[in-house]
Image 1 (tube, one colour):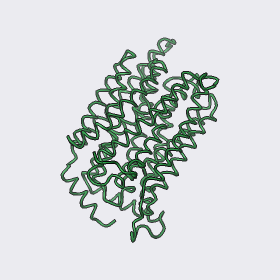
Image 2 (cartoon, helix red, strand yellow):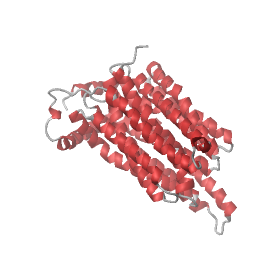
Image 3 (cartoon, helix red, strand yellow):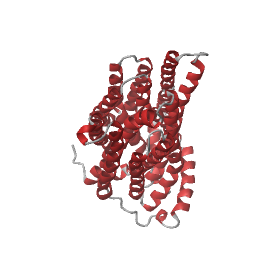
Image 4 (cartoon, rainbow, N blue to C red):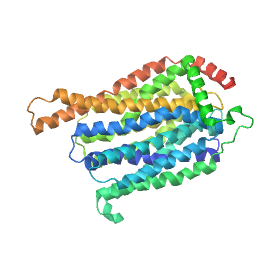
Length: 447
């Protein structure tokens, strides 16, 4: 295997850095703490709806900002600067979760939403640096390598955080609540510290003589945004892929953000859920690398189809599951395809965009992903509340209400199946040969 250069390592280290937030905060401790500490005493389906709203609000803000920020960054070769700014915004807000007191679910939602905004906005610029560091012919492997390194880094810190929460006395902490709050601080430090590798090792050379680098960058960015909208609308294969991505990545993001909440609604113990998240991390590391190699050998689109089929089957299984071991098995299934789906989508899209305009076009890419992340959490939260309302009989007692709550949660998780099915159907409509021809044309076209 060809040796990976410093820029590749520096780029991938950002995945190592920010995956701590994705794992410890988004996937694990925030949903648990939000339900049990910040929303103490609230109805289980109501807390799910609140959590969905927090995720959706952040996604809406990023979706509206991403294309404009990308266009501006491309004009000034400022992708690294934007990445670091939003990374440190996210890290600071993650640390601020330490200050939110018990029962203060409104403050928890707000601080979490801003931290999410920093996390997702930074990813816009992180993704846009992929063609800069990968070069020709290695984009699938390097995209998967980034996700694999992220699984390792996020998993290692999460393992430490789990030990802190399960054995707070070993760290001189008063209890579980103190341990979870300190875990948020540890994520902020980890995220900020390891982002420095990206800042130092990734070289983003300015493009001498590029006319886009002169003039007012904000006005020029808005002008370029309008131009990009017009081009994307008329490039049918690219448009169809983005629409497919919009559907299926919604399902992926919803699984990541709401799986722990779903497990808690079914009555699973917190320790079982923590073990499941650890399984996802350490299964995901080799799986992301394997999917990257499989995409190179078998074809990216075929491999994406395989991932979506596994996701759809896992969703059906989640609706029907009744035993603790099934949640572990589902975690392994998700771990096999989670990183691969995201990495291969990113590298597949990389082939369709013009050279020198990656931040602008990845702004579109991330915008659609974030708009999808608005729909998913609201869908799962809204379906649960509606199902609970319709299924609750008049004068229901506590036992009946508990049974209705579980049934409503199963219905809510079933609602995301349509996202994987719709994404798969649209992906099948993408004309790969035409896509490659249009990508070559876009690379030659003047911005």
